[in-house]
Image (cartoon, helix red, strand yellow):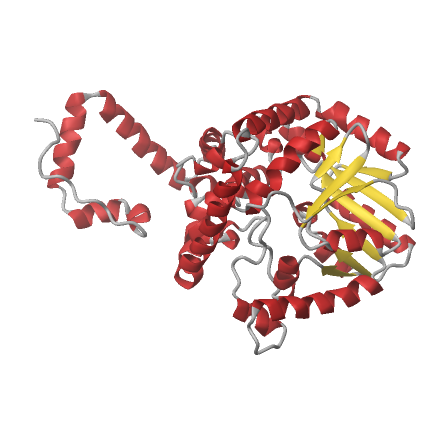
Amino acid sequence: MKHYELAVKFYKQKGPRHDKSLWAIRQKRDKAIKEVKEWEELRNKASEIKDYVIENLHSLVDEFIKNAKNAGIEVIFAKDAKEHNETVLKYLKEINAKKAVKSKSMLTEECGLNVYLHDNGIEVIDTDLGERIVQLRGEKPSHIVLPAIHTTKEDVAEILNETNTDPTYLTHKMRALLRKEFLSADAGLSGANFLVADKGWAVVCTNEGNADLGAVLPPLHIISVGIEKIVPNMKDLGVFLRMLARNATGQKITTYTSIFGKKDNGKRVIILVDNGRFERLESEFKETLKCIKCSACLTTCPVFRRSGGHSYRYVIPGPIGSLLAPLTDKDEYSDLPFACTLCGSCETVCPVKIPFTKQLVNMRHYVKKIENGEWKMENFGVRLAEKAMHSPKMFKLFSTILRLTPKPLLESMAKEWSRYKALPAIPKERFIK
């Protein structure tokens, strides 16, 4: 099923509540950034830093690997998802691990790590509250920061076999269950929000403290992270820490901001993952590598708010997912760049100033190179409209034809468009006589 089909289904079931919940977070975000007078200066600086990282990514990766090893961390470079998963399994088998606790990591979702480890006899317990909820429901996260935003308190009570739907009670119940998992886990798995090149450190930002427990309690801690998460130094890190939580949830800073170097009571491994990122450096979509996964573009997007994350069918939904997904499978995700009104709201809130509107238009051209019948017909209509706009006589002719054409016939000609939208009435008279 394509995005628009899944979106209609979702909206009928949960759309208004989902929209309201996310807009409340957008309002918290707006309030939080108003407290920072230099917000636009921070955005400019963050964008400049990320531009520098993109232009120097190869050398920064080398610098990070060198300094991380000097700091006592094992570092492995994985060229793709398969190599990443095999590396994680190798380290887990070395200690005969049977169970691992995992904090939030979009990179491991991208690589399909949970399923891979399960198929190889290792149980993975997601310990982020939202991630654990969707794991128990047999679902994928629907949002980068709020993975269970599509669920209700009744949904959570059901998976815990509870009749009490009080959110505080359910949170405490889940906390007690997860505490047992932390104490019995053989390894901890996590992602990272940032990597500091000149120190060789990994930085993890959480609100629940689960990443810290997974990093400290088990004897083995594996950090899986994309190479684009590198920042040059601690000074640059400070810019992003001031912006990340404000832009994501409206907080001044996350409850926990942890910097990981050498592990004192065991082994820490960082797996740097390429999985197409170096190749993207050479493409017109290299600016997507600037993304810090704050999810503000999802929270503000009118399409995402009403259609939900699962309608995108990709690990990362929303505007940024509509750019990333077709780069992994152009045929499967060719509809996603069109799941957008080009309103520019995502571009307005992006902390690193990704030019979403331009990139999404470019992505539409990219996927249209498939040249199947649907896109050919659309291209024909666009070219015809372009010619009419350049010719007053042709424009007048088409206007007359439209006014005289019965509305049912017009709707049948534009059936894919009018399927979910009301075709506007054709004016009886021209705007200018």
